[in-house]
Amino acid sequence: MNYRARIDKQQSLPVLLLAMATWAGAASGSLAAERIDLEGPIYEGEGHNVIAPFKNNLVTSTVRIRGNLNVPRNAAGPVPLVIIAHSAGGWGGEGETIKEAMDEAGFATLDYDSYAARNWENPSRGKGGPKLEAHQAADAYGALKVLQSNPRIDGRRIAIVGTSAGGNTALLAASETLHARYVGKNGPRFAALVALYPGGYLLPTATDSTAKTPILILPAEKDDFMKWERTKVWIDYVKRENPDVPLDVVMVPDAHHSFMNKSAPSGNQYNVGTPVAGTCPFALANFSTTGRAYLQLDGSISTQFDPACQGRGATTGYSWKAAQFAMEQTVTFLKRSFAAVD
Image 1 (cartoon, helix red, strand yellow):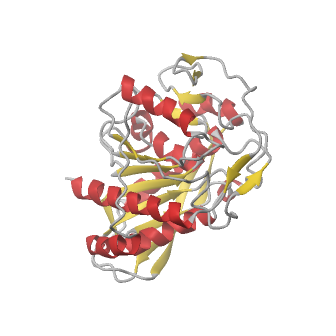
Image 2 (cartoon, one colour):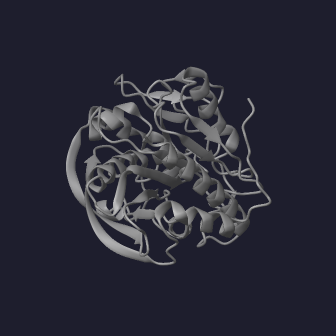
Image 3 (cartoon, one colour):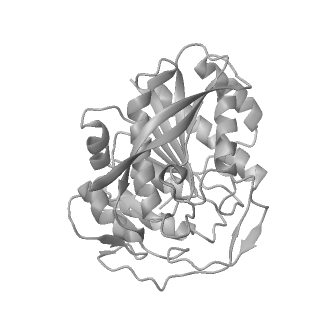
């Protein structure tokens, strides 16, 4: 399968972003912050066990999530909004990089910490993976509902941009079942979904993925933590089973996992063992059944998850060049998607 890689070497990020500012009214240079309170669920279960209660909507309690709405000060009228979905490491340098680029483009941003709101202090102890992605998707839909009536926001032009596990959150938000559950079948939709170096844990089934919201995936070419070959298995599966899904892929050249994270040293080598590193199957959020389903790397679907797929010694780290390229692609995609909203 051929994937399109649009690399325009003649147009730099600053030039493109300055031109993009006219979409929102004016370039900002600074943000006017506002606190937004959201209500989010807490589902039972840990790790992959969260999938069953997530499907059955077994909410044990709810929490108040503090969101930070950042609107360009010089924006004329309501502006498009980008919800930033953080990675399994929590809110940090990745989100800040996205926020800066979106501000320069004239878009508002909403950021929040799905861990902190639930007092999940250590994401390595069963709070990352499917548990984070399931809860972050619910949080994003909560934000979509709340911000529909905010006079500073164009409620018809709200997108999600996420990194790593947050990228999986953006893809999970493409589920028609989740859309119906959280905002109603005829409720508001996200205008676009962007996943930067995804490849986490939980993803929607092909048949449940929406054909009504454009999706952009930006894998890292040299990702040896959540490998491109693994992510491509899900992409091929969706394109094969539901070719109407508007899914585009642009490879980020010469980039490693976490290339957006300014807080991570460039080319950081770390030695970790994780049951989802690199080669493990995806858990599919198959909402139509109560059983578990896993997409294996050969493209088949089974009920088995093999924990023997651990990996050690992945390379991660920030790359200014890769981040610049990814944000250029993201802004161009968002501009096109926002303009296509009826």
